[in-house]
Image (tube, rainbow, N blue to C red):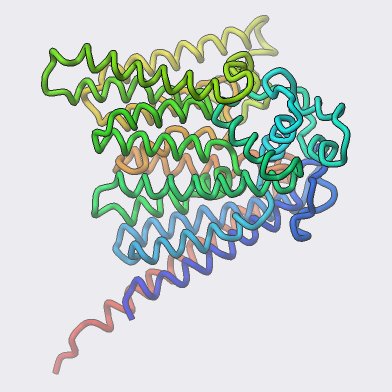
Length: 478
């Protein structure tokens, strides 16, 4: 029995247990501001956690996500040491993802809003002109259930997402016949397919010797599992399209790279940053400078045609541009700008607006610096750092926003930058847990302490098994 065969079952057991814990706890640790349209095989509690109230389910959810992160870190170490083969890593990713595919949405309830938008489109309502509250005027139980499932904060908010997202919502509405539960299943299926494509594209971008490590970095990443897969955020198709655009650029299929980058931006606006990066990448790759003007014109034409054709394919296809500020109505979370603005708001008159403006200037400065040094680093890395700057210098940052840049960076960066990105994933994965803000300090401390102890014990067991295998392979003297 090889070292990898000894380590893989242990990691698989930890991954499955962590995923099951996360899925079960997620069904109970949600804020009581909406009513789910389904009990999800009994995993979803009929009532949520009142705002500001401590919940033991939030602690359990925190423990599950922490255990997912611990399993991820251990698998990364095993992959780097060669104690995990690519086939075993694939099996580990699938086993850890399966409970989250089958379980209810974790941490965020945005997917209920997506399903409600599908119901709106089925009834001929404009998702860019009105929020899900417009379903109150639609007769039938399905419309009422779809509206009740949407978080109260977003019921009056029109969609800030692009026409590709709207097309997915219309598809969900058509398949479901207006049933919000089936609409949820459709969006979960889209998320699962997107994550699969994302992992494949990132592994394809990796150097041959790093394929297993990148498979673990992306496929077992707690941000990917919790926010892209379980919560079924639109970051899943957006990031899959981004990764495919980078892969097409790497393979010099430029028209495909431009189309894919535009489609990613038509899911969610920040991904449009990929379009100028791909254009500059193509021009830099040309051996004949005199051809650059013609190629640039052709590339711009492909981008414009993609945006226009896709926008015309859905009702009011350019209407989303009016609503790009909608996500700014949430809490700042891990936004650097948002946190500083909240502090300044009560200290200096007009301080919040000034800090938000400074954040925009800082983000623009980062983009200028990255553009100036574009030739000094791989284009995918420039894009990744730019997307991270936009995410964390925006007035509001949700944990899943980190995925924008991570999918471009994880396949290629190494050393200290990679270590910093891994740490970022672990921190962001534990944020925004419903009911977690009111959990008492001792309970949080106990969860963290137990998680650390468990991590140390599992890591020690993996190393003991590996050392035992090495010792058994030594030749016997005498």
